[in-house]
Image (tube, rainbow, N blue to C red):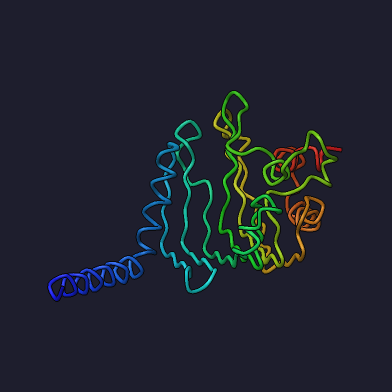
Length: 220
């Protein structure tokens, strides 16, 4: 009996040490997993810093994040994020009645650069931004399209937009956006983001690029 107790105690200590070790390395493991997921899709990603608060809190913070384009879009950096902070409401996420739609109490995102790439055949590395964030634009009016998520408070910054035309370099553009700390609250549907889209649109004076970025939202 004493023998079993002694080994049970040692096993408990071992599990405790393993648990502490996993907790201390969770950020590195999460960073490795995220990068691996991108690479499985044929893309690459680099993450300078990643801090996950779970299980002690529901926050995720990251900086110096770069996501690269697929090889068919040149393999160049697609998205550079210098600051990202997310506070997720896990109780809402796990609420079956909400069909697992995540609710973010706070999102702060600072984009250094986004590179919109178009191939010789006219294919783009991202569909228009409204279609990208809308749950459906075929069954709903575009402005009332529901989102895949909801946000209580969104703080948005964006420095530069690049447009790269792989078929005609002369059509490529660099646009200075310089939006700093723009705030949108209670985001549930696409129309809630319209003020932000309008803010970006004032910085993009080339109508062709504006249509490529926002599609039908500004095509009229």
